[in-house]
Structures are given as C-alpha cells and as structure tokens.
Length: 115
Image (cartoon, rainbow, N blue to C red; front, side):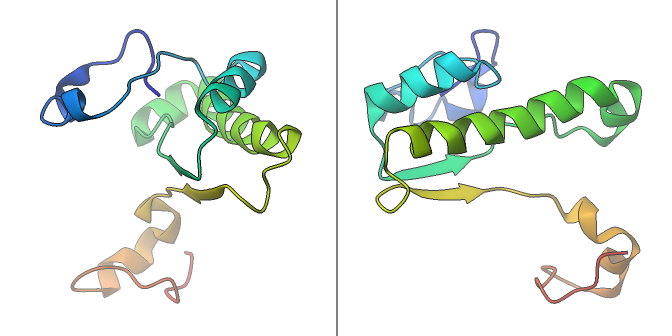
C-alpha cells in the first residue's frame, strides 16, 4: 500500500514483482476495503510520519498518521475475523530508546532501557 503522492523510488527495484495498492490508511473505510481486497496473511506496517523534526512542528498530524493508520489496520483485521490468521509487524524507531542509543556499538537490543 502506498499513498497517491508517494515517491516510488524506494520500491523501484522490485515494483514490477508486487501488486501496488494506492490508499490512505488514515481513512478507516479505505483500510478495511484494502484488507478485504488483499486478505493478507502478513502485514508489515511501515506507514508512519517518521521525521522527528516534523513531529514537533506538526504533532497532531504525526499522532493522527501514526496512531490512526495502525488502529485502522488492526481494526480492519478484527472486522474481517482474521485476528489469528493475519500476522502484523509494526515497525518502530530507535528514537524511543533516547540516550541509551549512545551506549550500544551496534544494533540496539530490545532489552535496552527507554530513556
């Protein structure tokens, strides 16, 4: 799923091997419609406003985009009765670990404290 205004360069190398659906996941009706159309076994949810600076400039937009898109995906799966069949991976950010990111020389383990 991509937004209508998305830059497709990130998927250009494999776009011909996948089905691309244009949708806005902050729209609950569209999220349900897409899920009913695709009936996924797996959802890799990377749809988010991920720019830290913008999150301070546009906090309501960031909250709406990140929380409502997640809610709409999960609700669509629930409404379809596929809670046990569809696995959902929700991506996060190392930013939630704050200062603890400076303590690790490589990947941050999930056991790292949130600071």
